[in-house]
Length: 429
Image (cartoon, rainbow, N blue to C red; front, side, top):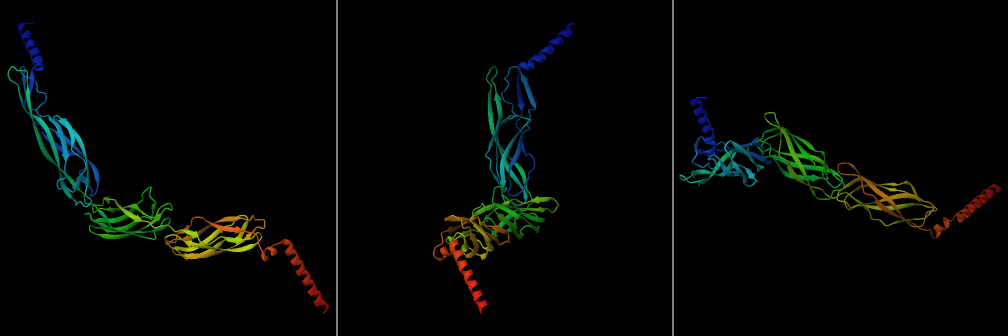
């Protein structure tokens, strides 16, 4: 190998080794921060949603110096340190529900996500608004190293900058319930729910349909839960009447129920309004009680017992019919009685004819009784089962005598003899 090749090889080795050992400094550079909303930036009035934002640092270090006598700084000038991010509402009709968040260090060419929970006002008008995003961070201002020293001094500057993030409130049907009324809606029955709805949004809706949304765990069940509205333009007010049934296990109180409007936008797209929750008052159930005293019957006899039923509930019962369940020692071919229409607090008397077995034990018996009736919407209903008390007692006086079989046989014998005597006397004449 000649001398020239040896010199070139030595220079190449020096060129490769010196940069690795030398100090590297960037003479110029700084963070360049930006932020954008990830995903859609269009939202409906009244919606609460997480808002995903991506914060990026596009800063570069264009000029680099390699000096074997200098110390390499710990942080490059384009590094954004201790980045803190806060979102504000500005003039937008929105509430920011998340506090400012720390993102840490963001080097040049790196992006980091952050999420804030926001809620747009229910009455927000359709428009585009700017949400101010505030970034606070530190970056290298200058580095200083005295000649021949092994100490490097670095000074950091704190910077706060605001980035505007545009969000759009969509034109939508914004639903407002102006009035809630019920009719004949009681525990265990079906009734009407009347809602007065207003479109306080900006969307000109067509083919609109109002719908009730039941609560899976609630006692209210829509039996006719859709009402066609048609055109439902901004400012329009419409009255919708729904049929709703109430569980028998409910209590007389106010229960929540949701209502929503589905419609067609001017461009043909399908749309759904915000969901409104309304309080639906439910009255007490229709109930019956037996208010008469116990009836008394005798073994081996047929008797008519009278029972007084009272509507102790909170609503009208129509075409009420009472019935009893005759069990041993009772039998009956007349176990149903018509009571008619009974308003709350009204009473009616039912009469049943029963026969008592002659071997019946003398004691108090309880017979099951119930009332079948119709509610205000002509639905057939059955009351809770009631206990009718019947006392079986020993017959006394003339009744006891006439119930004795020997006496009955003697009376029959006398009657037969008397009849025979009368017939013979007539023939002899």
